[in-house]
Image 1 (cartoon, rainbow, N blue to C red):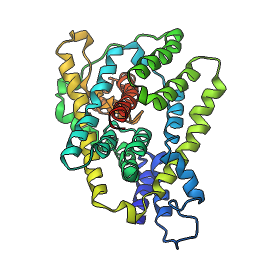
Image 2 (image 1 turned 90 degrees about the horizontal axis):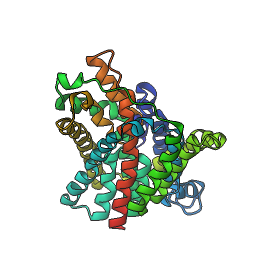
Image 3 (image 1 turned 60 degrees about the vertical axis):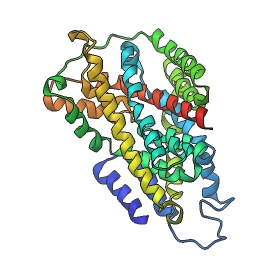
Amino acid sequence: MILIGLVFIYLAVTKDWEPMLLVPIGFGIIVGNIPLFPGLQVGIYEEGSVLNILYQGVQKGFYPPLIFLGIGAMTDFSALISNPKLLLIGAAAQFGIFGAYAIALAMGFNPNEAGAIGIIGGADGPTAIFLSSRLAPDLMGAIAVSAYSYMALVPVIQPPIMKLLTSKKERLIRMKKPRTVSPTEKKIFPIVGFLLTAFIVPSGLPLLGMLFFGNLLKESGVTKRLANTASGPLIDIVTILIGITVGCSTQADKFLQMKSVGIFILGAISFCIATFAGVLFVKIFNLFLKDENKINPLIGNAGVSAVPDSARVSHNIGLQYDKTNYLLMHAMGPNVAGVIGSAVAAGILLGFLS
């Protein structure tokens, strides 16, 4: 396990793969696997120790909503507001969650475990932690590490799938320039978005509420200090705490089990299904759109919640085939829709399984 922690740090430092996540998690894995004598009151599973107290934020699920507050405060929903049909791509990508849920059930995991594992397909670490803390706390370490690992591997996993499913002609599709979104629309969106999603999936309230509240702080124009705090110092502090404590929770005696191996395999399957579903949905959707309104299927991968990495992958792959075709702004639409979609999916699973 210490070697695995070192590998995480190596990938973060040398490859620049999600360093904000992999460095704290990698170091946490090393800390959590230092051999300790029982009774020293320093281990993460020893009641009353400092690490145990910090780990309560993971176990009780109050770190993930705080991260969603920061995500909302730093997210611009303009691309989604200007082209609402991109929301459907974010919804389609959530098929990976429910596809992996079905496969996990077939592999012998109980419904709660299958639901917690399936959420890895949303490529959203905080959501995975939030849901697993409710449904399968014993598997939380493996699920969290798996979710963050696949988030870091977005630039590796998604491009081959995107190229496999698209033709050269499709990759060259130029999308219409997004219309300008008014400040009023930006102010109204978080309120309307919250009401629509919260009434449909009330069990997703902690994540959805904080996401849209953070966005309202950003767009209201009168709470700049609060928005800056949420999107800066607050989310940085919580990211450090969640990373180090999740890493510490992966003690070898609790982590190195066959179930953990199964979770990593299912996480990869879930992530691949989500990418397949997003790209294929765009291809099918294009059959019903006029030529001037067609969507470049390369942005279908961005329906997962890894913001902004999956959108950046869409953009970079598009540039390989046309140096003047800038897809980043378009890809941000399904990408932020994926953030909402993963929280809604978590709420659905929590509502049915808890």
